[in-house]
Image 1 (tube, rainbow, N blue to C red):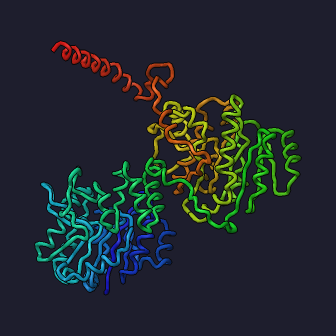
Image 2: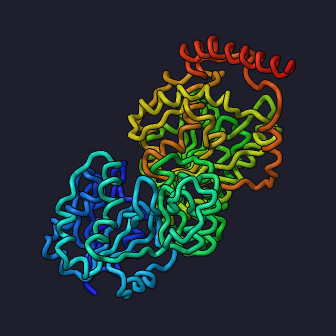
Length: 582
């Protein structure tokens, strides 16, 4: 069969998400010709990748004018109206769904063999007061009976470039089915939702409001928006796909992380490092380890772990004084792969790392650690914290690096929350909010392209203690700032400093660069009941001031508090008095 696929792509950040490449790879065997139509500007390397891969035959680049319907029209224009009608079938598809989650070829061939059907889709939208029943347009296939009729070309020639997506829905998506039905053709849906119960659904769109049913009937494709719109059940949707299909859910996790934010709760459960024991092989990338040594008595603890590494790496140590440098060289036995730099007692462990920009830029992967102590409570906080971070990020370094090599979109590996911070409520939304201004300032100074406002976030996924493995490119904007010592506060370090902001911003910088992160699991099994008890403590956890108006909207928030608050209080008192005496 001579089949044509017109595939429309759009990405607001101007790249092709890996799930799209997977989809094209799975769909390619069904089609004689694949035309890739991008409604967003793509860098040249993506054009080259698509052409060399053989996933598509031609590429059309256009502005996102008229959305999918105008893009399909332009794709047909590119091929030529007479050539389009020579195909045995034409499929119109876009990249708004994940899949195929299950084998699609059998379903496709079954629909193709049904002589009672002239065109078909994956799902239908039931009739409402606003719209007639119609096939949803993310996947439509027209057979030869339709293609050879003049009505097919007439419909597509008359497509206009609407700039409002609702106009496209009103005039095309909801009407294309009716148009061809009125011209004497018959249609069906692979999953006929008109036969389904809509009990408990806010709206009869199963692709959006009932993804559970989509998976139950094993429809091969799941709409991207279904995960975002159903975050409360999204972890279970992902688990179902992982358990019952061979679809790599990492593609879903990556895409949702990139187009939204990387730390949505429903995604975090999928971001633990894989616990599969992959055989360690020699690394393709170059590895550097940066260790900041302020407490020389803890150096040997790290060197002992490094001795067991089975991969090649270069070790860079920073410290604050000449005397400590000599002590470090003596303890390390003047090893040949070691370089020691004196960076002064400013910026703790992070500024010394950034000062090694010229050295670390030569490497693919960098591990950043330091001799962590907490003088106020060193055994309870400092030592337990350091030991757990070593167990999570230093000892399993070979496994971590293997996962970097196996996943080109992995940019950062952080540790899970240390146990001290689970038994003690220290990191609260109130405290974290105080870091937001410094984080927003850093984001602006780095000139990052993605939009994020940290002041609207209650807490951050961060590398506690700033232990981290990273791909250099993932944190390159931070190095490119080229911070000087004068830009960092002196010790004793004040709260909410630029260093605290850096500790919290690493995951989001990597996200801006197109990289995802993973979490190294804690060696300590602690029941979530601990978190539940800590998070639900009664009492005022805020500072001693009654209200922080900066936090609730500045002057406008203060006015609301003064005017609306008392009014509501009076209304409440009045209602209670009336109820009491009635």
